[in-house]
Amino acid sequence: MKLSDLRIQLTPERKRNLITLVVGLTISWTLASLMACASSTKPSTSAPLYQQLGGVASITQITDRTLDRVSTDPRTQRTFANIKMKALKESVATYVCKVADGPCVYEGETMRNSHADLGITGAEFDLMVEVLRDEINRAQAPTGAKNELLKRLAPTRRDIVKNS
Image (tube, rainbow, N blue to C red; front, side, top):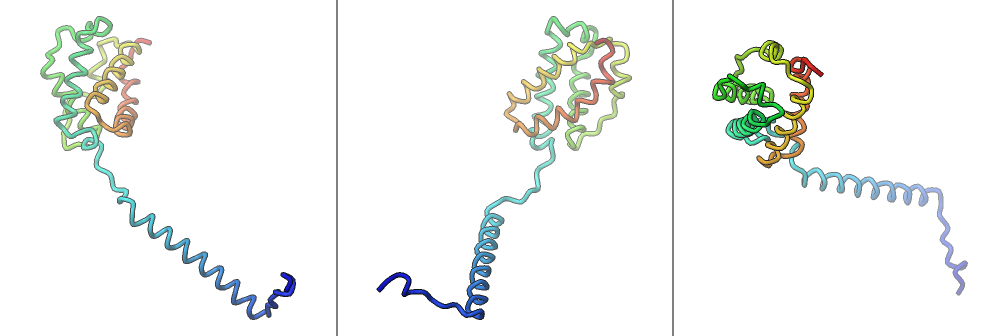
């Protein structure tokens, strides 16, 4: 018996049934795969940014450490001369908490008004951002949360920097 002798003749009706079967199986497998993927993934609801950063206490710790470092760094310490650090730390922590959608209520000055007479340079601002980034990393906040906070704070540069 030869292979050519095993030919099966498909009538148009059998051909339609075979195509319907193949299409049906393909759709069923695709739907089953999608349902399996959907059931194994977590819902896309994410915590508010301030919670991703570790909550109010963590934000306070991050901003306190940042201010401790920049207020003693020779490149930026002039900006902090005659400043009441306790009040500044509370204000900055509250501001960052608010920016991160936290429960804090910031009632301080605008960034433009509070920095108007300080003559902050671009280099000083950049150092502050670098130290803030380091302290967020030190707090082990997720990279996405860190990047989102820095993105939200970035527009303050135009209000704070007066000297390039």
